[in-house]
Amino acid sequence: MDQDNFNKPTNDLIGDILRNYEKTGGMDNLKGQGKPLSEDYLSGDIFQHFQKIAKDAGFKPHWLKLQHEISDELKDIAEKYVNGLKSDLQFRVTKVNEKIIEYNKSCPPPMQKGTVRLETVEAASKRW
Image (cartoon, rainbow, N blue to C red; front, side):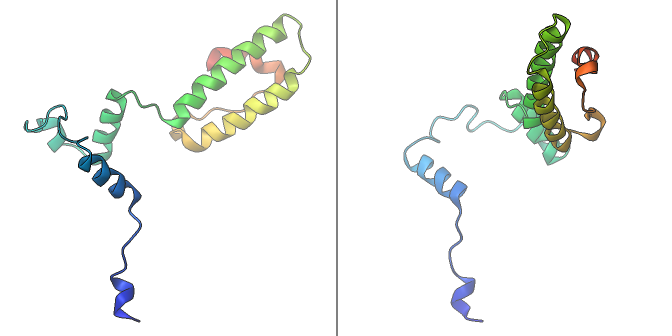
């Protein structure tokens, strides 16, 4: 193998973005710059720190957003089902079940939920 193949630059998009941001002065006045890190950052594992920082920054994981969407949709379907407006509801239940399957693929295993039927949508809306 040719020696030049080992020295080819890699495509580092995030690194390029950060370097450009630094060149334009974006890293000059960061909050907490020059202050020592708290003890929390030096204990525990990296994933727990990421989760805490992401939560503090207002980040919601995809599965949590899906959970809220599914809950809102189930409540709306249940309300229409109880009031006798049953047209188009089976299609909406099918779409919600697709979201539930997507949710189950990305959420923690203890939080997985079963799919719903039109007849059980009222009870399911209370569980979500």
